[in-house]
Length: 73
Image 1 (cartoon, one colour):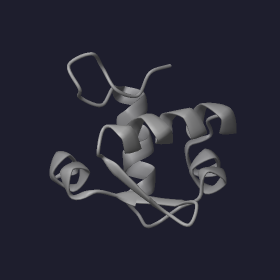
Image 2 (spheres, one colour):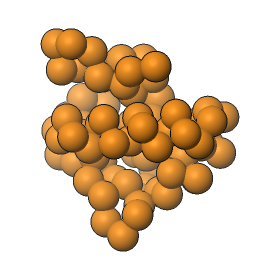
Image 3 (tube, rainbow, N blue to C red):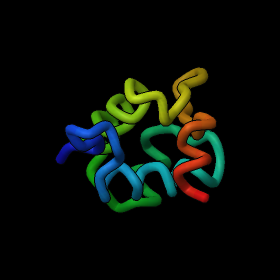
Image 4 (cartoon, rainbow, N blue to C red):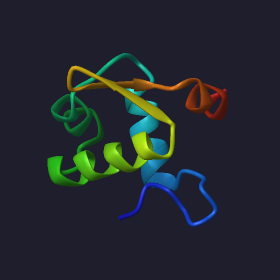
C-alpha cells in the first residue's frame, strides 16, 4: 500500500503513519503497535515518507519534518 500518491501527497495510509509519529520520535516497531499495521508495511511506508521529505530519521527513530507538521495542522 503506497504512502505517497503520484502527485506527492500522503495517502490515507501515509497520513495514518504521520499522525502516529506526530506524537514523538518513534521506532518502526512503536508505529506498528500504535497503528495496528504489520511491521513490514510500516517500515516501507516510513521510508517512503522520509524520501518525500515528510519524516526525519535519527538513530532509527522517526519524527515529523517541518513539511509534515504543516500538513497535519
